[in-house]
Picture 1 (cartoon, rainbow, N blue to C red):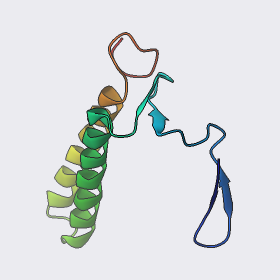
Picture 2 (cartoon, rainbow, N blue to C red):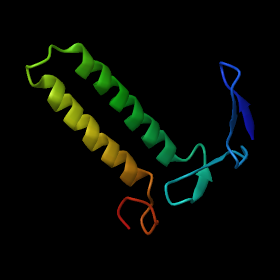
Picture 3 (tube, one colour):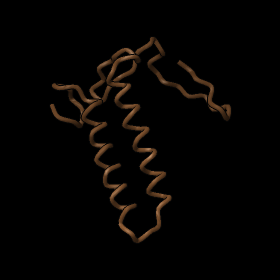
Picture 4 (cartoon, rainbow, N blue to C red):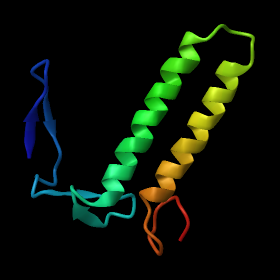
Length: 92
């Protein structure tokens, strides 16, 4: 499908929008699947952690700890997006 972006740029998804989205393994699931809800929550938390890390004074160590938690959450997201037995970067 083709999506018109906010700046007039066309984005081609190549897979169309039939109410599904794909995981790292290529497996397609409905967009209302719980895995996508979990991925959205992880992404939101990562965004908040990034804002928090950018907002604290440098040198105190808190920003580094927040970024470490953020990095671990990215790993969690990769595992969530890769179902057991899948061929993606997570556990197989």
